[in-house]
Image 1: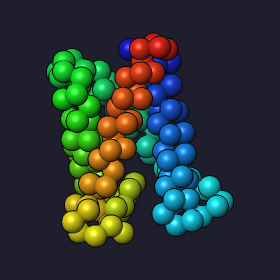
Image 2: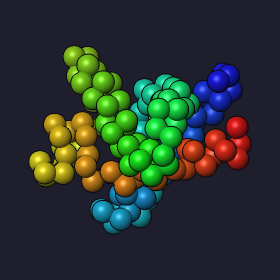
Image 3: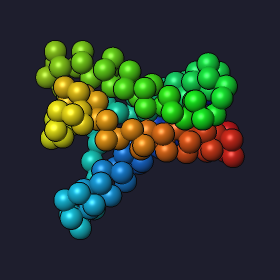
Image 4: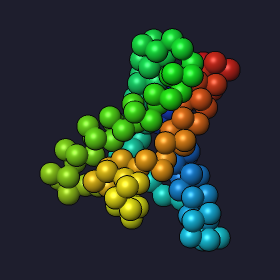
Length: 132
């Protein structure tokens, strides 16, 4: 993995999150302004997570279907490992507490986003095959 790939995945993640949050707000809140959002703190999370993390998942889990279904679990692990310690600095990069308790865990994990994390994993794998 070289620096240009890490930078690519950081930018890809930021752009994807801004697009996703804009579309999500359009669908759920009927906000037509398409104002997506993210935090610059997410850049290194995406840069290293989408490059090294997804490579690790591909090496560990050879079966495609099982790997696709595991992507939400990998994302949830990162959300806990990054999100929980940041609370000590009063930083909350994401907050799913607007969802009912059955649909989220302590505001850090959204069970509603399960299919989104699968689609992100498939998209990342596809992009890696055609670009990198």
